[in-house]
Image (cartoon, rainbow, N blue to C red; front, side, top):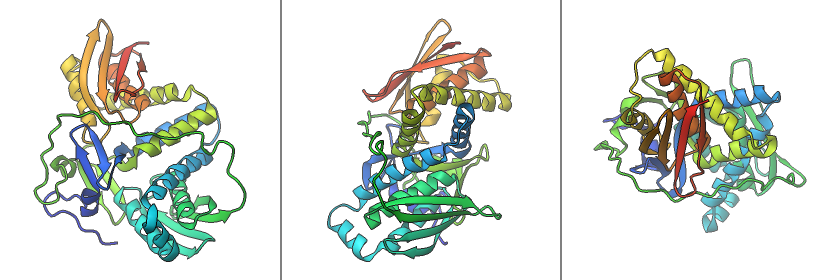
Amino acid sequence: MTMRYCPRCGVPRMLSNEHRWDPSGTISLARDASHRMVILDNDALDHVLDSISERIGMPLDQIIVEAKRKSARHFMEALLSGVKGVVVRKFAGKKVYEQLAKQVNMLGSGNAVMTEYRRHQFLDGAVTDAFNGPCIAGDICGAFESVEGCTAGAEFHYDPDGILRIRVSQTEGLRPEYEDRFSYVPRPALSGRNIYELCPVCHAPLALGDQYSFDMDRGVIREDKTGHRVILIGVMTLNNIFGELAGELGEEIPHMIMEIERDRVAQVIREKGKDLDSSEQGYLRYARTLQLRGMGNGSEVRTDGESITVRIDNPYFEPLIAGFIAGFYEATSGKAADASWTEATPGYSEITVKPA
């Protein structure tokens, strides 16, 4: 696959054309500002999901497939609304899937190809360097349901060469009773003052090309400083995955997610072996590293004895943000930490961290 990169900053043209970085600390689709995206460390996502699975003693694959199927179908239904959807579904089903394969590459999710397709029956695909098998299988299943106008199921496995093989097939029967248990309603974004220096050619933030390397033929994006793989993923998708886990496994899941992310972040910071500023200004600088990734906008820090409260405007997912702040607290204070947070219904969340 050949994709055009910006000659000035190195960011893929398709990515910069289809996304906007807003001063509010958010990334959104250019064609739909309500559909928010976030740059997420792939290892962090895998670690959270694997750790939850280990703690509860059961695999999460099917729950993840179902959550991704619902969010993908919701997105495709909006994309293929009206006359456009009628035309696409009637005449251009195969082309839709080929375009979706390009989207998989652009978002850093792997190199996807459609290997076989029969209208209203099944779709076979292969993904090299896949970021997460259940997530991609769910995405393709949801797209298939929307385009074909049917219910579908997904099967996937990795072959000996590490290639992810997926088959999505039409199924008969009704969905489970919890089909519509979780729904995501985008929150209005609070304004912000982050001013990005933009590339004069493609208008993506110059910091994006400075901090990340893009290999769109492989569908892989890496953070230069750490070497970690990252992906661009929908905020609706993440909320749906974790909402589905909480609905299926219990309301303790959000706090469990915070703890898992706290421990991971604290370990990463300790391994760097650097002295970090734990003053209010130090916390504020740390919180503002979220902005380019679309995770939110650190706007205020307050201290009260050993307690730290950080306000994040437009947080992408409160438990993960709380774990991010609590991990910094543990690594810089040397004390075990616990965190609580407010739901971001007014557009911001306040995360309070104190000794456990």
